[in-house]
Length: 248
View 1 (tube, one colour):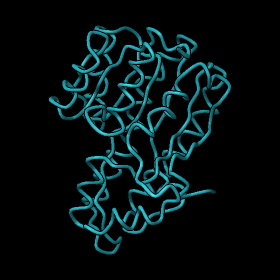
View 2 (tube, one colour; view 1 turned 180 degrees about the vertical axis):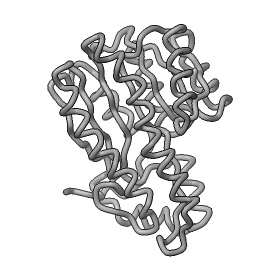
View 3 (cartoon, helix red, strand yellow; view 1 turned 45 degrees about the horizontal axis):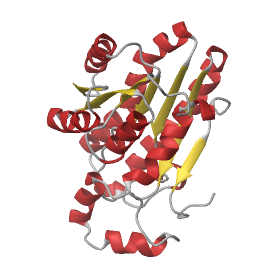
C-alpha cells in the first residue's frame, strides 16, 4: 500500500475532475482524505463515495483564512496532515490582448496564490513532525505554453518554480515537494472551455500521440505515487502526464 495507510491527505479541488480522482485513489491506498472544494455539495459527493475515512470541507484556496480554517477542521476530524495535494484551478481561454486584468487576478489567485496559501499554512506542521509530501498539479501549459492561455500558463509555470524552490528549502526536514503536469484532460473545466471553442477536443485528439484526451484517472496514479513512500527519494521534480503531447 505504499506507506499511505492512515496518512492524512488534504486535497484541494477534490469535488470533481482530477482532484476527485486523486482523493479516491488516495483513499483506496488507505489514506484518510480531507476532500476540500469551494463547492460544498461537490466535496460532500466525493467524501460520501469514500466513506468514513473522508471529511468534506469547504475551502476557498484564494483566502488564507479559509485555508487555515479548513486545515484546523481537518486536524480535528482526521489528524495532522501528512500529504498536501494542490489541485484547485480555473482558466478562461482567450488571447492575451483580449484578456482583462480582472481575469488575470482571478487566474493567478486560484492557480498560483492558492498553492502559496495552502503550502504556507500546512508546511509548518510538516516541518515540526519531520515528514511530509506536497504534490501540486501544474500543467504542460506551464512547461511549453498554450495558445489562449497566457496567464494560466504563467501561473502554472509559477507552480513549477515555486515547488522546486520550496523543495530545496525543506529537504532537510524530510519533506518531498513535486509537481505533476497533466496534458489536456477530460474535466469539467475543459468542457467549459469547449463551449467557447467546440472544435478544441477534436484538435487536441489529433495532436496527442495516444489519440485521446487524458481522463482524471490517468493523472491520479502519478500524484499518488509522488505522495507515497515509493517516491521517498524524489523531490523537486516535474512529471508530465500528457499521452506524449509534450516530450521535452
